[in-house]
Length: 323
Length: 251
Ligand SMILES: Nc1ncnc2c1ncn2[C@@H]1O[C@H](COP(=O)(O)OP(=O)(O)O)[C@@H](O)[C@H]1O
Ligand SMILES: [Mg+2]
Image (cartoon, rainbow over all chains, first blue to last red; front, side, top):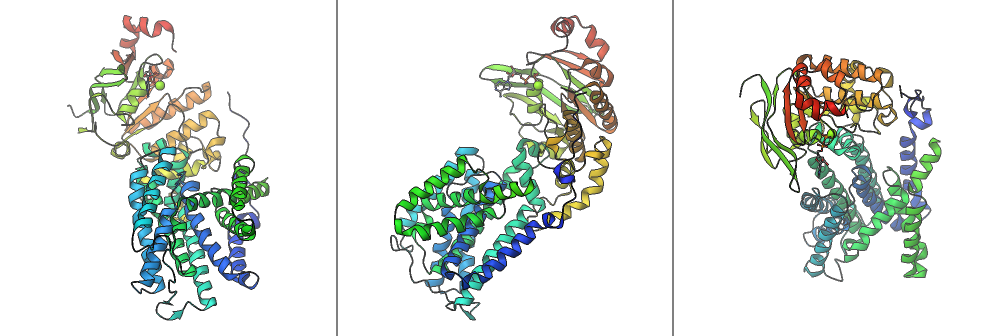
């Protein structure tokens, strides 16, 4: 008999309170931290960082939990921000409806792009998502309503539900915090749902999932649409906060940046993309004095992460904590 | 086609770059039987399974399951019809627990797998059924183990439990006892006999004592073609079979 001596798996060990509730505790710390952070640093920076954090979390849902690498996620982030900005400025919609418009746009774009890409595997999948994003970038560059190089500027923040003036610093901050935490919790729920369980099975062994009768393409497509829509939610919110929608958010370096954020923070960890987004953004902020060199520094970080810290910041910490 | 034939193929052929891995196979599997597919390595047995479950598309030929032509179907739909396969290389979800592996199958059957807004806790309703299936294959003490940590024989048992969770009418098992020690082989073959009580089993198997023990019908495949068919007596006395297959020992 080749059977090895039975060794109990990690799951069998009785978890301490801290371990069992580590995620809940981390969430509370994060929520409270973000609520009091404006007393210590620039609220505008924080709001922007939360938008990017949600964007990275949405991206991570796809790469970390389905194993699909989208190389064109700026498409959903950027186009949602255009539509939200347009809806608020030209159509005069209230901010929540403008954000909804942007999110819905991203969901539809996700449906189209996802349907085209999902049947392809690995690098081909990434290439199709990139190609579609580039196509839509040129469209954004040419289209009238996007304002070309200027973007859509002076987007009114408006009145939330027609009631709350978002020019108020506390109100806008509260809205962004709410959107971020809400989006984060939704992603957490998706990952820990019956649907998320199937995603996990597909990532672990797709042929087996198919042989059990799962139409795996359909699950991947739904995950893709959810990811695109949440990226859109982030982009729309950013447009209202920054009062601007521009080519930067729809261009390919933005797609690369979200990969970087996720990788630095920890791919496939729930908090990783949040940490990654804050780290990268803070770095860009601090290093803005060195100009273009920030790109070189980012490149070095990227390579370092890939070579030395594949698990990212949060991934490394959890691994230490477990052992 | 007669009512007691659950699966039938006609001129089933798969060519890879002109080479016929499976060439003109006419197979008829009786409902409720244990049917073994044997033959030397490279005979086309796994390819046959891939064709039957639509993981490969045939170059030519027809597949009829429960009176329905499934030749053009998607693999997931074939599984939903009740024709479920296992794989030659053990197929489990490695980083999910034994319980979670079985629940994935139950969840598909009972249908709330698209619910992304609900808590995973709703899956606890399947625990009792899952535990019963796990007990059936003797894995109770491993319930909370990650599948990847299981010894090889136990992985195969888990795979069978997961497959049985779908309560399929017909089971395709690709070398269920390959690479196992005696004890595991005995356990698995008893299990196959038990689960075959109310369903059909088609299995690829190299271990001839398992084959003679379990099978009602044996089909011998060599170089993609059917060489002989019948019960163990008939097949083992067939001179062609003795020369082509038994002669070289069981590979
Ligand atoms: N995808 C494939 N492409 C090319 N040749 C293949 C493929 N799959 C199987 N074959 C060939 O078909 C023949 C039958 O293989 P297989 O069905 O795996 O045999 P068995 O399971 O009976 O050992 C072998 O010669 C194998 O090399
Ligand atoms: Mg084989």
